[in-house]
Amino acid sequence: MSTNFEFIDIKRIEPETKPISARKVDFGEIYETQNIDSVKEQSSRCLDCGNPYCEWKCPLHNYIPDWLKLAQEGSIQEAADLCHETNSFPEICGRICPQEKLCEGACTLNTGYEAVTIGQIEKYITDKALAEGWKPKKYIENFSAQTVSIIGAGPAGLACAENLIRRGVNCTVYDRYSEIGGLLTYGIPEFKLEKKVVLKRRELLEELGVKFVLNYEVNDARMSEIEHKSDAVFLGLGTYESIKGNISGDKKDGVVEALPYLVKNTEYLMSDEDAESINFSGKNVVVLGGGDTAMDCVRTAIRQQAKSVTCVYRRDRDNMPGSEKEIKHAIEEGVEFLFNSQPLEIIGNGKVRQLKIGQTKLGKPDSSGRRKPILVEGSEKTLEIDKLVIAFGYQADQQSFVSKNDIRVSERGLIALENKKYKYQTSNPKFFAGGDMIIGSSLAVHAIAHGRDAAKEIIKFLKT
Ligand SMILES: Cc1cc2nc3c(=O)[nH]c(=O)nc-3n(C[C@H](O)[C@H](O)[C@H](O)COP(=O)(O)OP(=O)(O)OC[C@H]3O[C@@H](n4cnc5c(N)ncnc54)[C@H](O)[C@@H]3O)c2cc1C
Ligand code: SF4
Image (cartoon, rainbow, N blue to C red; front, side, top):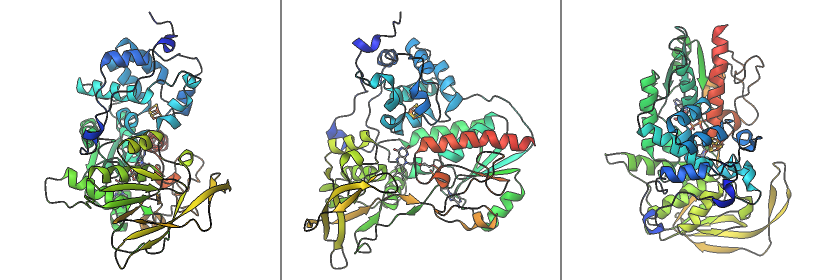
């Protein structure tokens, strides 16, 4: 019998991680599988506080206390049903959301007792239900003969497709890659999210009736064809223009950008053929940046058996944008961090040999609200390096079919959602958009929320 005070005696326990020595040579996910008893016990820590801040802080507003209760009772299939009311891919969010900044960061138990392990339980519920043969159900079999085209099979496009098909709307998803998932597949490494998790979703979406057209780069001519045969179009193209640091010497051999490095490594691991990776085995590697992408690069280099891996970041640890748990994992795996360090120059005769850095101190907040790093004069020093990865993030890239279809963009190149009648509708009423391309490089959970909500708006639009 639950007393709602279980949190006093039961401590927060996360699933075990694999031994560090194994993690450093293996690209697989690092957490061991939880058992049902531990899931029930950890779920019972939820206070059911009556004002679930966790729900509000979750961008999807998941019904967290309700599915924790079902998990506590061992009703996993019912919990999976409830998870899917709000979230198209709960097992993915459970793995990759920065929970400490979202749901768990808002948990009432943080006042001295440590948050409920919401993300890990969400992952367990769906993994377990799917392993038992659970499948998402349609709400309506057939809504009409209308068709929606979705460009981009990232989380935004896939969530839009899942929500449309479950409401009886036919949809086709187009993507230039040979597999679905966008950055879930090609950006985020296996040790955070194994590819088989995303592949399972392809199987489920296809069973529901979603059609995929892959290896299909949408250009002006193809967009025109797609537009003619669609009643509405959703764009979830992401943001792929890498932010350059304009560091002197960044064209030298041995300097690589983060995404090509991660994508090549993923393609190499996924492919049976002779795909080539950018391999840092035996090299002294420096990664510039402090976000999730930088953390993924340092941990990939560790697994490639680099000689040393250093992350250079110009603010301090508290101001790192990356997820706290990923920084912790990187430190455990042997990554060295140089905080308050600004890259100044890449030195080498055609080929990178050294990196000059300077010490910084944090000044007043800038226009973004974050404290500005100020270089301390005379603090320069050099690091001996073989490879340098630039991981400063991504911004919108311009695809010509956007402007050709009269879709307006903001000064930052993001799709402007100016039409007030339907949320997520662009200046061209037939086109909706979501994900990174409307808010800039962000989180998968935001993209899923946009895709879900845009699907509902598209259905309202189709009804008129
Ligand atoms: C290295 C890295 C690590 C990350 N780690 C995390 C994390 O731990 N947690 C988290 O929540 N988020 C993380 N993110 C962010 C997250 O992956 C993105 O916010 C999310 O994937 C955005 O979803 P999206 O659908 O908007 O775009 P994307 O995932 O970028 O998908 C866009 C899709 O559109 C396709 N496309 C684009 N143009 C065309 C075209 N012309 N024709 C056909 N197809 C096209 C692309 O091929 C792609 O498949 C990470 C991002 C990176 C780069
Ligand atoms: S989707 Fe993300 S933020 Fe929401 S409950 Fe799951 S892990 Fe937390």
